[in-house]
Length: 111
Length: 351
Image 1 (cartoon, rainbow over the protein chains, first blue to last red):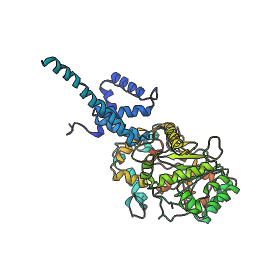
Image 2 (cartoon, rainbow over the protein chains, first blue to last red; image 1 turned 120 degrees about the vertical axis):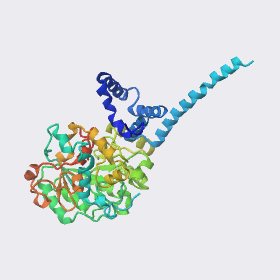
Image 3 (tube, chains in turn cyan, purple; image 1 turned 180 degrees about the vertical axis):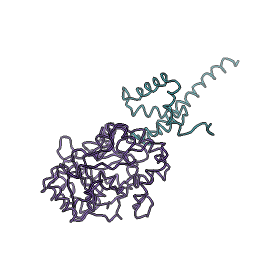
Image 4 (cartoon, each protein chain N blue to C red; image 1 turned 120 degrees about the horizontal axis):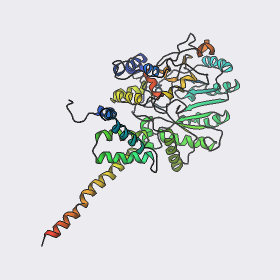
């Protein structure tokens, strides 16, 4: 076993998940590929969304992959950082909006 | 930012046999990745053979006013290898008789060869209709004596192909040197002013994009659209096409890959992106490369690795198209750079 939970070289082996469940694995990769094709959103926009989500999911493989993907598409580092702030804003917003639930509960319980 | 060539710095990588050693050892020697020869054998494309010769690419010298981080020529102001008028005359003899229809002039900065204009004029008299000059743009603004280059290009209907790594100043200057972006923009505007790159104009102006780092170029069409939108909106610049070119792991780019510990990952990216249909149209199948001292190579990259053509004829003085066409193209692992994704050549994607 490797000494660390994450190994950057494992990203290259992603495709191997099909070996232990071929049908489901292939279906997943087919779906994945389709999702990132040019559609109502451009492939560029999708790349930035993926980068933001990669951070909110805190997936190091995805961060590596979509940082490189962004560079390949000519996306600037300023654009990448702004995209991450969008993810961060939603993350912190999602925490804080639950504050209303806390407030509701306090108001219900307090005399 | 380096201001000297690897050669002037006595860097190990300036030695071409050292580069060949790196490309043939490590992950390729221990079988972790297939060699290029093994890869093209899978689709019966080995040995790689030339098709009809269309382009003569002549390197007028390694001198350049810039020292770009990724340069596969290791060009710079300190490089003194410049084509002499004698070698140019030998090239002109060949031009008169060749089946090639296009003359592709490159360098260094080809315009810095003192006989550059004379050579273009003579080649024009010798019947060349399609000229390509690979201009780094800043040369046009580098010195007063170059200010009229746009007019000169126009007079000879030269197809101008210019490097431009990004539509933003930051990314451009990081790869090519401080101030390069502003000078390039000015040069592009001047080329536009004399009619280059304008929609419908016969004066062709194309841009070359290559990534500023250890990653592959994205989709050529998408990048072209982004470049066009940004350069038009920000600077009112027009151009015709964008060629997205992959950086090959040789010379300064190889040095960078190794120093930044990106070499193995980059080679994996190239091999993963291998596209057999790109092999059919790689530039070495329709181009011959001539070095500043008159030697013949399958392509500009092989020239920089000192891999002369595998033919009895190795020099422009002994040029014989029939004998040359009957040769095997020399390949090595750097060739993966031309077969990644949609493929890459000096003319952009190939598949």
